Length: 314
Image 1 (cartoon, rainbow, N blue to C red):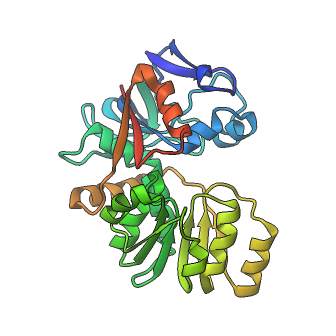
Image 2 (image 1 turned 180 degrees about the horizontal axis):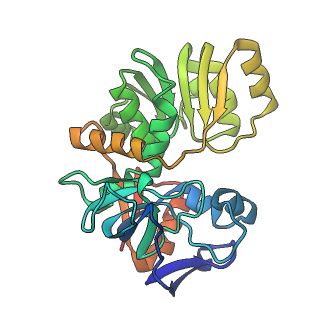
Image 3 (image 1 turned 135 degrees about the vertical axis):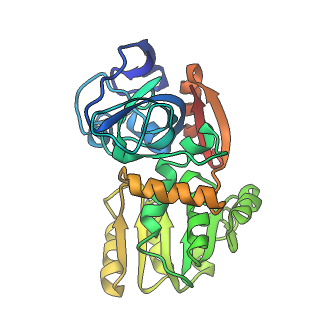
């Protein structure tokens, strides 16, 4: 089969399309013939840096096959697998954090990380509704309640556009930030209010926010904690190390400021599947690339201008 090997951390040219053996599966796994792969900012962040690559992949071995988000067709099932059969269309985030090996024509996945695709959903849309959607769900589901005022930064991005929809579905009042050109998109996703971060400083116009989802970190996080009501909460996705001013502010005002790393979870995938079926969650795929142009998908993510998701078809 064909797969992209990363022999050493570095630029996109280090993703080398190679011919390797199909993976063998154990009793609790299924072999998926990949039809679509979702590309995430984390893919782009781990590729150039050994330290980050080793941390997320949980291995120092080389070469590695990066990527975690897949949609495809079950080609083989392990002896202990009862929920899937050959021919089923499935999607999920495989072994995150860990060695997902998704940039390949065939992927060995724990059955517990997958769910069946809903009828009428394309492989591209299914692949898109994985890591980014799981992140939004796992952040919001235990931290937001009906009536909360929720601030979601970067609402036009992968996590952001899912988070807007999920928070709105939960009954929250959703405020989001993005550039002006993406305002209409954010409002279409369900945002109640939009702030153009280039023209308005959100910390000057917002107060008494119950919860902030911050995908930016640094200065944005420091400003975000200032708009929270006492006892409010925030999750920052980029890094677990918070500025000292954020730690002090949180302690002084009883704020719950956390770093969350999404985890593979089949039950959460079932939740996303149900939302897709009900029409309460809709992925937006703005860029699609064939498998032999996967490097270009990385370049697209590196531009920082991707609206919604970028997907590679296999």
